[in-house]
Image 1 (tube, rainbow, N blue to C red):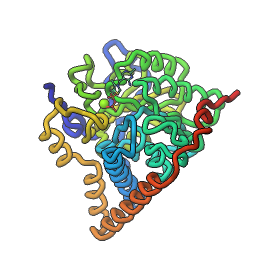
Image 2: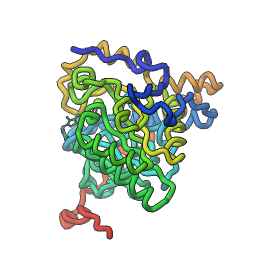
Image 3: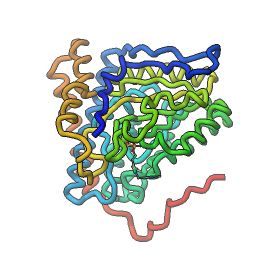
Image 4: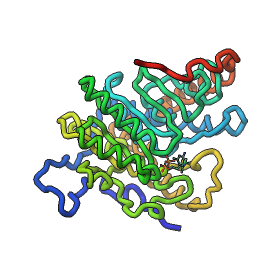
Length: 358
Ligand SMILES: Cc1ncc(C[n+]2csc(CCOP(=O)(O)OP(=O)(O)O)c2C)c(N)n1
Ligand SMILES: [Mg+2]
């Protein structure tokens, strides 16, 4: 079994890719980002959002076990700092986001109501996709959140389209297209890279490198496992970031936004992160040891990391506990709502399946 490197060991917070051999050394490069300097209030908000994602996902896992959630369900536990750090730098209603099927955490980080996300998971009419999308197919046009996609890598091409729309409409927005380390080996990703750079589209490609694609470690599946270099042959610069540290994530996002908004075209962020749970709810867990997962939890947990920052900023343990209790209440209410609200009516079977826009 190939042993993945830990996010912290692999990068000193963030590093920029060296230009590839033979590259044009005169062209500008993004700066190596610094960690974001958060105020106490911002740290509290990061903590609140990350704990919300963690507790929400734990509850979703429980509801799945009880048979209340059907179909697929991919939990985001361990990766919270990525969505929270990036979303915090975006302009709500202006910038757009698209991701794969591991999408609940992204929606929560976007401030979408936990009740309607949980109700979608349980297939209820009050769910964000009216109970017909489920875990992998959630959207909120209002929040410019464009899903939720089950085809590995497909969202990257769709994201390039969103980037194109921002440019075409000259609306000043930026698209963030998330995908996994496994998706990084899909062909359409590179077709999208080519067009995005050629047309200087305002898009940030974010690889959430959680070290595994289902049961295959990135080192086993990738000839170039330093994924932040993957855009270089298209002249897309890359940054590798400690995705377990929300301040490193936010700092890199600031740099990426500066790059894209400066008219330089796309940029690639590789977030080194880790998922604690199985790929989906059925996972034989034979491809890594318990010790590996435990070591990551002990050394690099993103929530414990923010807690440390909070304590350094003078926030008391009691204040932190009060946030934890409040989040437990919000999640319990979301679960109650999701269990008690009705399933969609039969006559709704064919409604809202296709949105026609001309
Ligand atoms: C085109 C396509 N091929 C294969 C699958 C099956 N599949 C679903 S998830 C997955 C692994 C993807 O891993 P990664 O991109 O690292 O994302 P992660 O699950 O780690 O978030 C695969 C192979 C799929 N859904 N779509
Ligand atoms: Mg992965």
